[in-house]
Image (cartoon, rainbow, N blue to C red; front, side):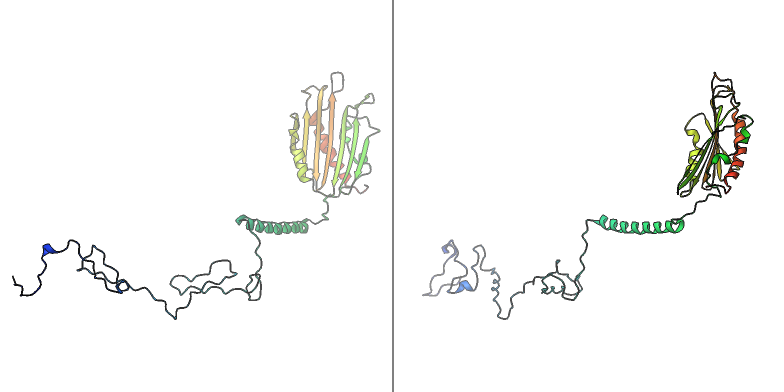
Length: 326
């Protein structure tokens, strides 16, 4: 131990130290602006780094520019990352209507209510074009003055005078002195009709059978599809009718027969019709008979009448092509 020199002040001993350490660092005038006070829990052996001095405003700094209002309704386009600085904001437009000052205004865009609206407009336009083309094509192909295909048939002032029913005269020898004859003339249709009462003898007070012929000249429309539908399906009307397609007459012909007599020649009904279409001419020759137990006149057989119809139709159609018509 070193001995204290004489006259030197006594050194304090550890037990003589105060219980509270003095504040660190010692305060000096103006120290507040140089370094903050050390927290009490830090020791003098671990000084803290001095706090950075507050930034002083520089005299040459310019105030930050504010974005200028623009007529462009969307945010300013930015350059993609890595391809340069952001694009400069669009300068303020002086045009009061917000149009670009480059010369031509933008065309207004029609309002859309969804993706279906555009497609609907497109399909409507295409439909109008297709419809116009179809209409023009129909007029070109058919025309407004399509000539009727009448195959030389002529309308008659008196059809009964041109009808041949000689095949029936052996069964019905009595002549009808007052046949029914009428005609219709129109720019779209000429129609001739003849009805003749068939009698087995002069003693007959009423007709024993009925016979008729009708010819239609279609001058505006082709009767083919409707003719086929009517006669090929004639048996749909009644169960007692039979339909047979026959050849040798015009473009198409059908034979329709009916027999409800059940083998009794004096009761029930029997009928036969031969329908022919030749071009735009349609023709029908009909025969029908009705019997009852009160009559003693027998009805002709249907098969026999079919032969008469075919024979007399051939000659009658030739007569209807003569030029002595109206």
